[in-house]
Figure 1: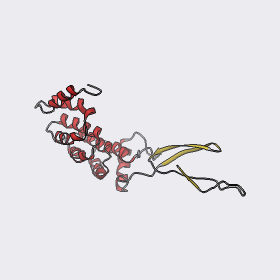
Figure 2: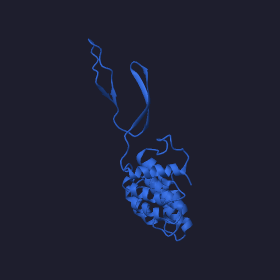
Figure 3: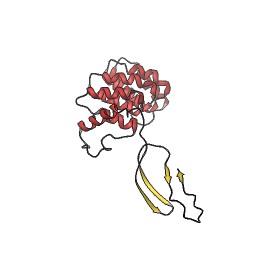
Amino acid sequence: MSGSAGPEAERGLRYCLSLPDFDAVTAALRALIPQLRAADVPLLAGLLRSEDRAVREAAIAAASKLGDLALADPVAACLDAATPDERMQAAIALGAMRATRLASRLADGLAAETGQAFGAFARWILTGVDPVSQDSSRPGDSTAAVRTAWLEAAAAGELTAPPAPEIRAPRQLDRNLADFHLAFGRGVLRIDFAPASPGTNWPGGRGRC
């Protein structure tokens, strides 16, 4: 099912969430994701504790889409799941939710992982920094490089604070116009103007946009 369900269809899907059939619950929850709202936080918190892996993974996807930080702790509990796929989905969901207070726990989880680089995805979403692309000396597709960069960032205390914006490739188009590439981040951009020529009214100093 895709798109928005009508009221009758949504009621039917919500009814399916109470069934003892885990397959039905999983399918209904995934279909309901576009209709979820803040009032569904308690429902999702309960489904995140389901004994069934497929139900939990659907609930993780739903929590990621909803983005309510009230679900961060129940999602984080899935970082201790038995399967690497579920742990990875939980980590990516926490990143999408921007649950920065759990970044250190994500780093701890990554330190214990041997076959997954899930932390790189979470860090990229949490902080806006791709730990590999920022260092050209690291091979871009190396799982080991991603993992190492993530853990180094955790050790340096970089995971809980957004990085400063980085401006790349500034160029002057004409005497009144310039452009640039915002690599990541957000903030106030300060522009230094050339000093005014003697006898002119150009203010000089700093501009801001």
